[in-house]
Image (cartoon, rainbow, N blue to C red):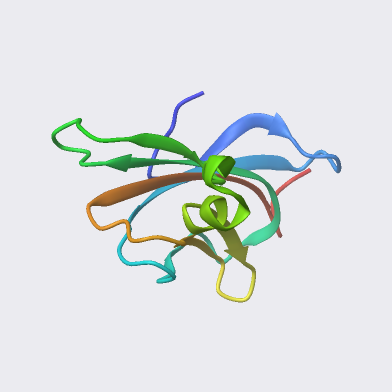
Length: 123
């Protein structure tokens, strides 16, 4: 499997035998509760799967990296865990991936890969 910022048709098929496409997007994160988004495609029928990774200081390779969706460390209790969480959502009305950190994440970059079927793709 090759990851790319450009849409690709995978070798996988969905339940209705429609081909599955994938695209990876990159988003720069900022302050707490500020949602960032990026457009995927006008042709999306169903989201099959998505996953992501957040990196701090991508250029210098220092700091932390963690998967998304991310639920913070519950060692400080549920409130602490939620405040460090970062969610991935998909908005079908805008065909966009949304990433919302619940704590300040300036200097962090999120990569999200989305797998989906298209409305008019061949079966």
